[in-house]
Length: 420
Image (cartoon, rainbow, N blue to C red; front, top):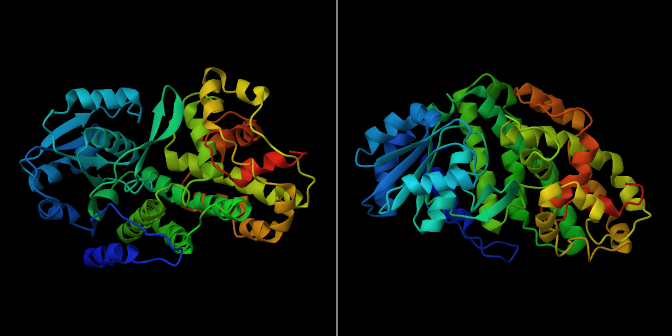
């Protein structure tokens, strides 16, 4: 698919939708092809006149793309953050703010997910646009309108800026370490349970669901699943399709102004692990954790959904003190995050009435065995142990993860099951 076809696709996504909601997109241009970096001057001219653009890299991404970006944009400033220990947190934001020239009027994020979150957060704070230059097909957050940040140890979604444009060069991201590509595939495989969560939330509470966006996310997952062996081999065309799928997933989130289509229980489990409440610090990428978490969530969903629908169920009013105590010093923040309780309006009678559709949504999720096979084919971690998590962490992870976000998932709804 050509870059021009993708531009027309963006316009088509803005067309009136059967869901009755106007879907807006902040992204004005996507260039996805080999040699895309050569289009940087043209893309910048389309975006406006900028006197002080600055490209932000880390040490690895400067080696991957920095010289080509500087050749394409010789007047653009460069700022290289240290790659070692770089996280999307208050320390990285402070570092970038301190080193960024005060008169910067455009930022370029040249990197993968962590660097994009840092740049988009700072761009939003300064009220300036930013341009996305992905160097690895590792996450679906390149066009996100939120930044996945860690503040004082707590994983949160912070309001941030969508890129005005994306320039993704397949010659660059196909050459990224294979592990980063596998992370992108793992991130997409985690959408299976996220989509089930969205459908179930719609059934139980009437939470808005757009069929068009749902199908976009399903398409993104298929794009990744159909090319797992080629991705493992580093095939450039397969990597380009993976990047297309990741961007499509990001656009789906932008269309509903929420991460709901792409983030559910598996992401909540991965965020719990990233916070390090149950485990030592991990060296795993976001998509690696999501992929491993998705196998646990799929097991829980397939193993308990019929018992959940059959009952008996109890009313659930939120985490109790025993739950909160597991979060230690973060307990007050977790208590705040979980108000109001998303299950407050869900009755046992409504669950019973919607049982058929709830079970159908879970039946559409691949089994944990099938997910492990898909992850293995792309060279991604398969189990929690594969990403360095201690033995016996599974049950506690599933029990604590629903409290990481104030969002109705089946994993949270299982709190109503008396035997859970």
